[in-house]
Amino acid sequence: MLTASQALGMIETLDIAVFKVETHSTLGDRASFLRVQNLVRSILGRYTYLEVGSHVGGSLFPHLIDPACEAALSFDPRPAALPDERAELIHYPQNSTARMIAVLSDELPPSAMTKLTTFDSDVSAVSPAAAGPKATLAFIDGVHTNEACFSDFVGVLRFMKADCVVCFHDANLIADAIINAERFLDHLGIAHETVFLPDTVAVIGLGAHASRVRDELQPHALDRKAYLERSQRELWAHIAKVHSPKFRAEIDKLRSENSRLAEKVTRMQAESRLDAKISGMARRAFASLGRKADRIKRRFAR
Ligand SMILES: C[S@@+](CC[C@H](N)C(=O)[O-])C[C@H]1O[C@@H](n2cnc3c(N)ncnc32)[C@H](O)[C@@H]1O
Image 1 (cartoon, rainbow, N blue to C red):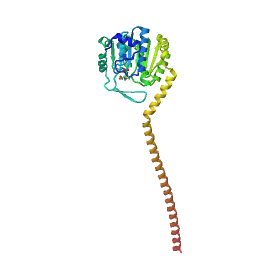
Image 2 (image 1 turned 30 degrees about the horizontal axis):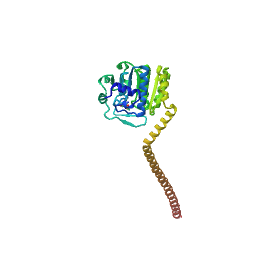
Image 3 (image 1 turned 90 degrees about the horizontal axis):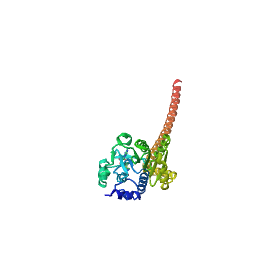
Image 4 (image 1 turned 180 degrees about the vertical axis):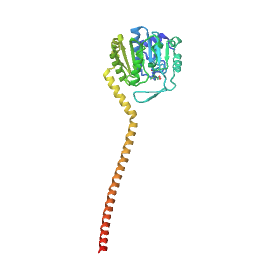
């Protein structure tokens, strides 16, 4: 088990070995998480951390072990599977708060665990009065659709101090939610600055922390325009790749229906030509019979 001072040294030097519990994040993401944690520690000294989407607690761990983190709130309704912007269903077997607490308790002293309050609920469904002091650092990592992430952002704001930092994970999947969040802050008249850190971490500084996020994180950030364009291209390419067998099967089905229809039309055209021929023959036979009948009538009339 890491001691708090060992963990602190690792956090301050961006040593990602501090992540002792499984986390759904890349190595680059983990370094960025620590960079944001260091920024908040340096601005505030002490902070309250709020997390949307905790799974087994990997992203909670560095905050729970950090003496500067006074309290941590975790919101996670624990569904068995969730959608995401790639139009795929992601499964989370054995996803429970009890399991997360058991895993974290194996790696943390009881004093760190007492900082944690969990809500098996969507953040929008909880009243801020139930959560105690307002938070200064939030991390949104629940359902990775634009709709859900924007809803989480709006829900999270109610739990935050006016001057705070809100981060999004998997920013490459939910870039539209981040842009919506920025427009929403414009609408509210709240100063804000966003940076995109490697690999997929978007950080928004709000109020008095906007300029600190810009000045201190921008040197480590990715180019915004290039990042957003690449994210959209990669997302579309992924959707096309994953879904192309289904699209191809649908196109093949439509093609075979089309050729069946074409055969039917050809058959019907042939049948109608035949019908026209038969009725012509019948008309001619009828007329000739009529002429014969007239001749016979005339012969008998003489
Ligand atoms: C990608 S995992 C989180 C990973 C975690 N942050 C980490 O790095 O270790 C997504 C989590 O979001 C949770 N989730 C699903 N719907 C949610 C919601 N409406 N609000 C919050 N969390 C949700 C899932 O139960 C799952 O545990």
